[in-house]
Amino acid sequence: MKSDTNKKYRYRPVLFFALAYLFTWIFWIPAIFLPQNLGAVLMLIGLLAPGIVSTVFVLASGSKELKTDLKNKIIGFYKIKWGNVALAVVVFALIIVSSILLSTLFGQSLNQFAFTEDFSFTGVGIAGAFFTILIASIVEEVGWKGYCEDSIGNYMNWFWESMIFGVLWSFWHFPLIFIQGTYQAGLMVNPLYVINFFVSGIPMGFIITWVYLASDRSILACMIFHLVVNFLQEKIAMTPETKCVETIVVTIVTIIIVIAKKDMFFSTRHVGRLLDDVAENNKRFSKKLEYAE
Picture 1 (cartoon, rainbow, N blue to C red):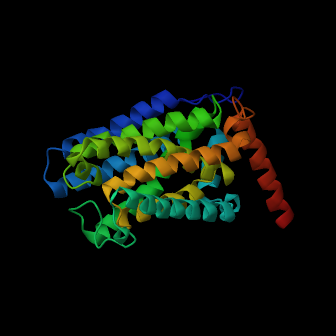
Picture 2 (tube, rainbow, N blue to C red):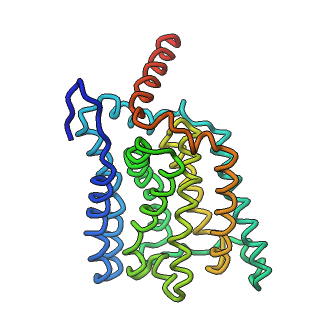
Picture 3 (cartoon, one colour):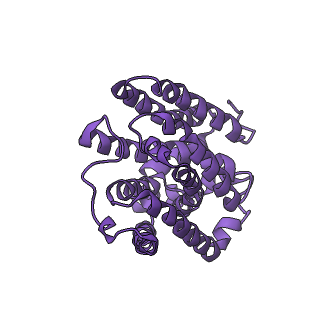
């Protein structure tokens, strides 16, 4: 993975996904056959895999720009467009409200406008469940935004990047449907619920890419949005049927966002020169610091 100073770093998305899947699933698959408490530990370890693989790829890249970019994306508060993050949170809240209201046409109750007492996965307690959601929001985004999405986006526009990432990210969760106590395992009562879970990840991939790009590729912005989404999905008392409706609503909202931000999603200006853009942004940021001093 080393590159000399006269050569551009070449992103390796296929190798990244192969290793991210491998080092996640080697812990998640055994968890299927182990007691729930031990399985929860293996699940947590597997959850860390994409973030660890991403960090290793960056540190071993030999690219100063890639390393600086990762640091700036994680701790660079200056990157975050707080108005856009707030808008994304409001949009997702409206998606939930609209989904619940629409679900009443199919016999679902307005009692879904309430918080659940527990989390959908068991065996770790309330504090453990919240900790898992927090860790997932932080570590997953370091993995997916630290290296993964850029490694795909460097070769194509962000529309196709979002499509590919959404499919691969969604399927990454596959072993969880067989692990007792997980949210995904609870969906096994109906094949439609399982299919809906995996399909829903695709439009969500577009929305979180929008959050990412609107904040100048800020991982921190994605962490905040991801945490809010996870919390609302867990604590709002939506039924599995309503979550199927929600997928339709999310898809409609995604289409609206892509149309409204078509230059963002269909531009090819960054293709093949993502690290060139990173180097230019780093120079601009350094100049800002000099002027501030």
